[in-house]
Length: 145
Image (cartoon, rainbow, N blue to C red):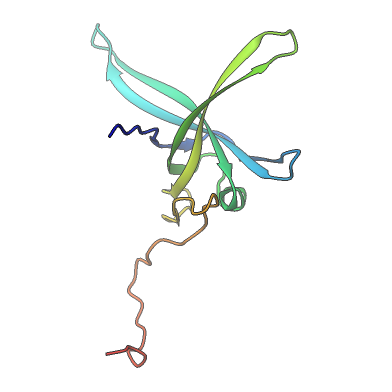
């Protein structure tokens, strides 16, 4: 049996505040640019740094989370699928786009506090805080054993 996989995993910083819009059908969409950087030595031994920019697209309940919590500079872990599209510009030329359609996001810093957004369920996605850093004591009186 042949299987295929389309998955992108990125850790980087939001390049701007989210751009949230509503489509003609009434669906809300959020777009965020994400910068990933790497350092390397070139052939002459000089230290270089390269920054790549990625277009992130969020749908469903993830839009609400992104709109409320993500700000320029925030460090994010995202996972999703790569999607290619094209549009016609004003001059009739074709523009090509590569987007990461995000289905999971974890905020890693700049006030994010490690909040996790689980994979999309039923096309939605949602917000679920990560495990607390201090233990929470709950009474054992309602345990079934």
